[in-house]
Image 1: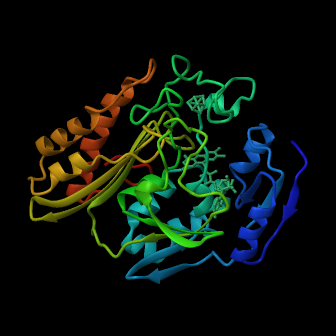
Image 2: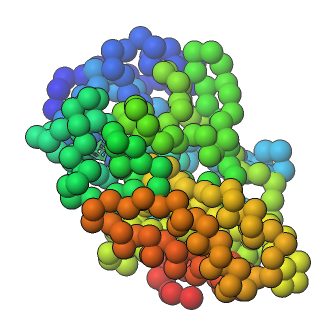
Length: 337
Ligand SMILES: Cc1cc2nc3c(=O)[nH]c(=O)nc-3n(C[C@H](O)[C@H](O)[C@H](O)COP(=O)(O)OP(=O)(O)OC[C@H]3O[C@@H](n4cnc5c(N)ncnc54)[C@H](O)[C@@H]3O)c2cc1C
Ligand code: SF4
């Protein structure tokens, strides 16, 4: 591990200033991802800005919805009464990830900005365009069972590993950030980016910006939601495919439905055409299968992960079926509904 400065600002303004003044500076929150990356020499910050003293630790009402501060831990969000009453999908998605100990330390802002779990990215002995731009992507044609099937580029086929973010994408959250030019709000679907020619950039955060909160809109889905996570082990494993679904029904007819997939792209993956198809249709297996087919038609699997295409298709059908029936997947007792 290299030597680095360490600063611990008390205000957001001081944190932004510290970022502007430090060479290769990084914010550190729970440290559950960044410290690992530093141990592997993937990240070599010249300055660590410990943001854990900033006043971003509350969950509060905002514009009829909820605003979750960037430093609220994943456990606090998952067990918060207002989150469970109004956005149980989010609680379920968080509880599907990591372990109790990790969720106690991990923060909302850190979860949003965690890096990919591509094996090559963590191994400094191999090339990797995300770690070292221009060095190549050995995952293409290499070991790529866990990699993306949507939105890849010739430069990178990594996936975004978060569960929480898949739930936030389906919920149409927004991300409030602050930086040298002031505050702005980023729609969740625009926060993470596809790899394109610059896979080293995971998000649309501008240099020096910090996440202040994730804000949930004023919307109710009753029991019509679910987070379904499919993985190699039933706990403590990243998603091969996950689906977060919310739905509004008029009797047996779908008024609107949104769903996001995890484990399949460089960002939580939504398909506007499939969501539009669902509106006004009967909530039947045939409808859900047709929507799933629209999504997977765009899949471009890698040499070892064609199985994800069929897994995604079936997961979408099951997720939509669970949401329509109001039988959400339980991530606490791992019950398969
Ligand atoms: C063994 C293991 C298993 C895991 N399993 C899962 C899983 O199944 N599902 C899942 O979703 N996650 C999983 N995780 C990942 C875990 O959820 C993340 O490590 C955690 O959410 C990161 O939060 P943190 O506060 O510790 O971030 P840190 O490690 O402190 O920071 C991570 C990144 O975010 C940046 N950052 C932090 N806060 C801010 C902010 N406010 N503004 C801007 N940038 C910021 C940092 O600079 C850094 O780049 C796992 C992790 C481990 C170690
Ligand atoms: S998939 Fe992306 S992160 Fe993985 S080796 Fe290729 S460039 Fe690096």
